[in-house]
Image 1 (cartoon, rainbow, N blue to C red):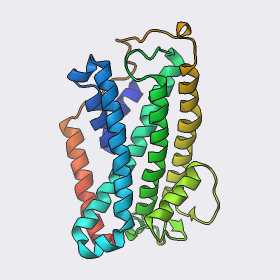
Image 2: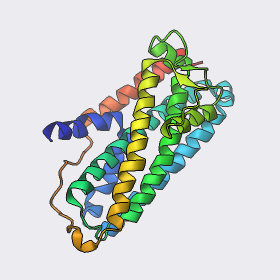
Image 3: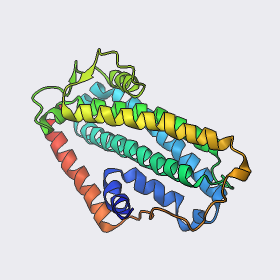
Image 4: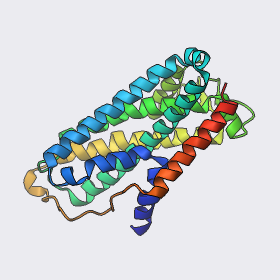
Length: 262
């Protein structure tokens, strides 16, 4: 448990800044003792993140136009979108992994806060967001920037995506384990992301949704009251180290993408 706490406190916020931001909104002093407000904030954050995924998908559909009209700005935006997409897929996996584990072990009643039908809807939205965000990641891995960064010598996918729509199409095939075989990863990094997407999608769709549906129809007498002081994992908090590391990642990425991405 101590190792898990250390990872959540110091490593995950750097890989996933959105995890840090979401945690701050959900667990600040104002929402800590107001479960109804917390419920509204969680739903609102989920809707905002899903809207951003659609917005970034739309922006990358017109990537050839933006890169010609605004070369430097489009390159910076491209890197930030990729960083955001990685941040969100990691956050979704961690959040539902921790929440699913807690619900299996403790089987608490959904008192005042998010009920299990709310969690079911959030999981479905997150599943759709995973398809979009992994599509953005795969499209980013398809660029000359990624090819040069990882010294691949060739594209990380075969054949190369002609648009972000094809990347999202591949993402949908991967997460649903359809695998038509018309597009496939040929580099260890693109293969690793594909495996991680399959595991995340299966966990979210099968395990998490099964837990929420089962608990939603379980007799309330068989469920336990929520333990207010039973927090198995420590909450994250932004530190100067987190912020400086995130800024460093962005600066280095922008400098490299300006050099390699065409």
